[in-house]
Length: 258
Image 1 (cartoon, rainbow, N blue to C red):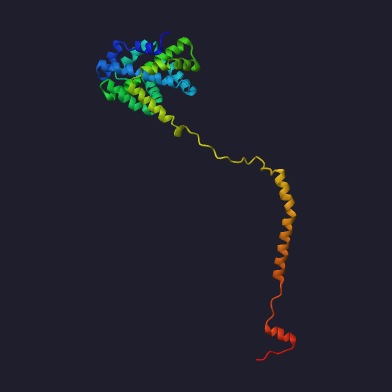
Image 2: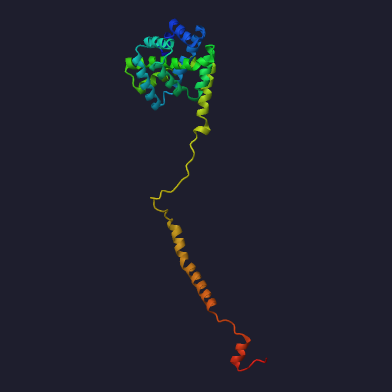
């Protein structure tokens, strides 16, 4: 079985390139360069996410749906016809959604680079959608013919990853690496250390026996101090008020001199 990259290159027939160039209003040579750059970019980015099980299940579903357009060569001809008629086919819609998912925040920059290869920066987004549709059709037919599930498809893409990424033009490859580094930076990937909290269902911490014994032995002494302080306070509050001079004279039988 030939590699995905070789199969993808076989879809870029002169007829397809000419039709796509006419639809986008760009030179055929520029269109060929743009398609040759975009195809390994889309396939390589998918291969780079082969370890993401959730993504691979979604990617498998899209590829299986794309296989309904027929063999990859038939699908390519249908794409060219759709572009010539100025319409949108379901394969183009699938390609657009897949390109957005794969390229994420780097999509606009990559589309700009692809468009400049075709001598029209504004055509880049459409060219990427077309190549993503081609890639889905190619993979969908491989899935159907070999009966691949998501895990097997992940293995296929992982085995092709190095070859695909080598075919990506340097500027686009550098942009993809920068984007991956930004998404996986220590600040973005660091998991904050949780603040420990006590489960309310757990019993309160038990005091060690040695500490409990120490506290228990000190209790009588502490209680005696508290009791003594309480008695002193009571005596202070109950002490008699000092007698005035007149009161003392009256008790002594002496009438004070006016």
